Length: 230
Image (cartoon, rainbow, N blue to C red; front, side):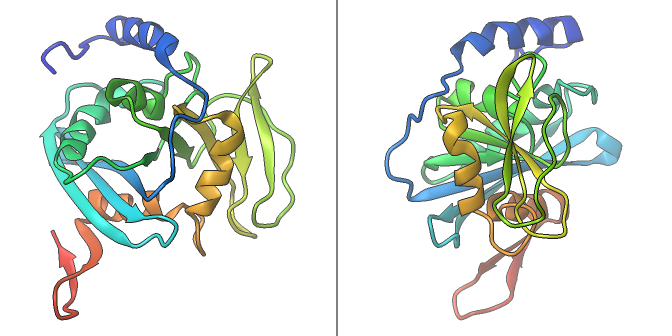
């Protein structure tokens, strides 16, 4: 990835070019595996540590994972998250035994000023189905949600529905779901909810966050020993 952008202007040009390649129809068959990706940072931000965890679907049991580190190449700038995190995430995805059927990213899909958040960026680069599931709102507006699991409301921006605001459990803040690539707006929230159990975040994102931030994943060693500690 020697041609990775160095400036905001270069990164914006990449986003404007790739946004035309995003596909918003369901481009996947039967889902047998779903993956979560997330990134943390070490060395006072100089090194990105990216994690991918693959779960069986619909059982949501961890079946594979990878952890990769790479020098941080881009500053933290809202709207340009992928240029900071994606190089390490791409390295981690390349380490998997097999590509997952669907990837859920801790970030935005098309709910982005230029319709190319990290989920869309990764999806287009790898041509895999992706969804963004973010903890905070980047763009758009939505009505109030009922305080019940599964409540969803359209997220709209500039007169276009770009995703959903989704309540994954009562009494907690919603998440912001938008398709990344090869997933329709209509299916995005449904798929995220299917990957969510008793926590606010889907299991994909939760496992990936624990691995990226803490180096821990609850995959059992043979004989039922303690979880792997990376």
